[in-house]
Image 1: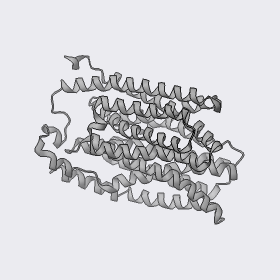
Image 2: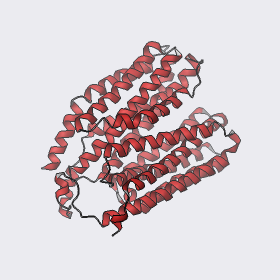
Image 3: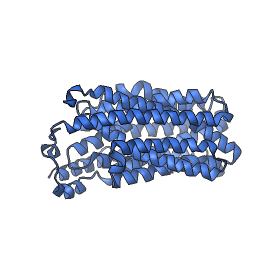
Image 4: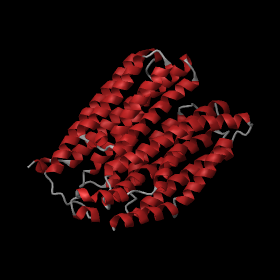
Length: 413
């Protein structure tokens, strides 16, 4: 009865709007708290906030992959969203730098547990195309980030309590939207016949004795490590550009790469993602993602002292994310659909590696830049990133697709 009134498009947009609102809250507080902490304490403690956030996401993703109920139940997802919002709000009243890092860790834990659950519920909307689901999710995130960055530019530093109150409100709204959508999706799922989809795992409802099959239905480790490496490289310029521009290209504002990056993804994410339909297309997009990173870093090696080159590098970096992110999500979802694997666990494991990449990359970006200046080799960091991106591009051509298909064949047996 309830399934007749179920509107998958409406519920997907509830999730998208909630994500955009929360992303706006994240973009609102991040530059302000990092800047204020850097001025009051040090750059190390400012970086510790971002490190704590990513470490929390790693821990949350790990817990979600081991204990799916923590990440997949509607009330658990909502509670994790509120945990992130409340932890962020508490940062407005802290006077110690270590306290800010600790609360950032708690916020990251909530994020690491809630986001895989969000993807899991999007994938329950079987009537909607998976590629479109993830490309619109990426679009919503970037749209929220642009709005948050714009708002942050108008807020005085001394208004941090007001800022974090707004952030808390955005996460409460996000939690309400998510809970509404998840409950509707769960009710619809309960009233839908168990056999859905076309893969071998969809021909029957999994029984308890399928645990061994589910355990064997895992994506190859290199597939996950490729995700971690991609985001490790992609986050490097967030640090690298911030340090590079004041020293080598002061003629352009430091914020330029971030604005451009968000706008490129907003305008191109959905049109580009629509072009990938087959599994082969998505693997080609993974390779194109690494190719864009390589070209971005190579441009910095050759012309890094020119502002136009930095701008072009930022654009290429964003195109790398346009190609890579949604296609990786689709490949993960399709693997789960064709095997006995639990999609929530796979998404949690995927976010675990992505968060590890972000965590390592944010620290490595500063270290490589410092080494490049100390050794008087200004392009050292960009050379290393370009060489590593080229290697990953080659792996993405044959090695990773072959391992992926082999894992899918094993799980189908």
